[in-house]
Image 1 (cartoon, rainbow, N blue to C red):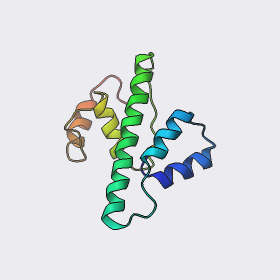
Image 2 (image 1 turned 135 degrees about the vertical axis):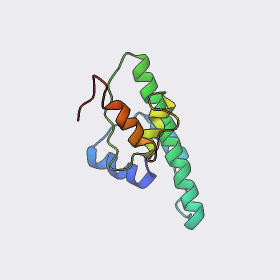
Image 3 (image 1 turned 30 degrees about the horizontal axis):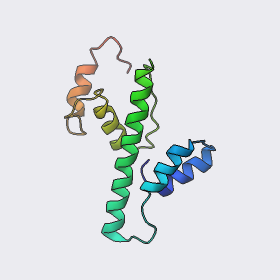
Image 4 (image 1 turned 90 degrees about the horizontal axis):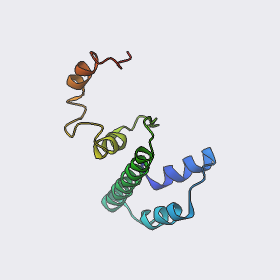
Length: 115
C-alpha cells in the first residue's frame, strides 16, 4: 500500500476482495482528501506505514501457518517490501541500496543462489 488512491485503483483493477475488517481499518487510516503539500505527504507516509504494518502481520500469520515462500509485487517501489522483510527478520536491519552490493556478493556463494 503505497498510497490510498493507488491501493483503491489496484483493488478495482484486480477485482480484489478484502475482508470487511481490513476494509474498515484501511478507511480509518486513509488520508483526508482536503490535505495539501506537507500535510498530504505526511498523511501519505502514515498510510504507507500502516500498509507495512498490515503486510508484516499478514506475512507473519502466513509464516506461523507454515508458509515458506512469498512473492511481492513491488512495482519498482521496494522500500516497503524491504521494511516488511526487516520486520519479519528476513532481511538485515542495515540492508539498503548502499549495503545491497555487499549482501549480493555474499549471496552469490549460497547454494540457493539463482543468477
